[in-house]
Picture 1 (tube, rainbow, N blue to C red):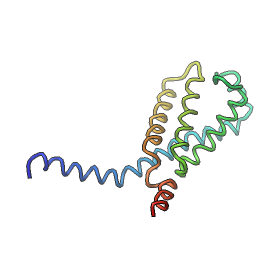
Picture 2 (picture 1 turned 60 degrees about the vertical axis):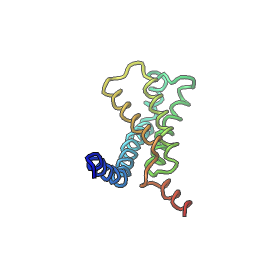
Picture 3 (picture 1 turned 135 degrees about the vertical axis):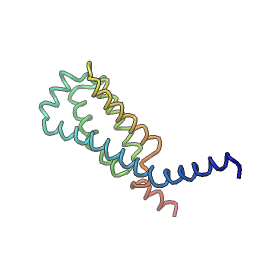
Length: 150
């Protein structure tokens, strides 16, 4: 066995193990974390609905639609999409939808604190990861896919 093989083969074995065992856990953790962040935001909007409407009318500059419709759509997105994302049902669609909610949240504010912008960026990266890779093996999507193949 040459030097290259002695270096590459162990790396390939570790990489295979990481992909097999850690990737599904990492994807699940990303789904749960981002899902919780957006779901909690939706719950806050419902709890303080008058404040939500005020903010959408006065603070947030959501392009192209009426502030009240934006409040309803944003709140619905923050309550429905995280559930499908965490469960792993049509998770790419859920992640893409939450990406849109995230983008609109950032562009609708005239000023955004650097820490808030950093949080939105992190959520965006995690959501793009979920759009690209899907929910992983620990999801209803994966379960359905395995039953269809069988």
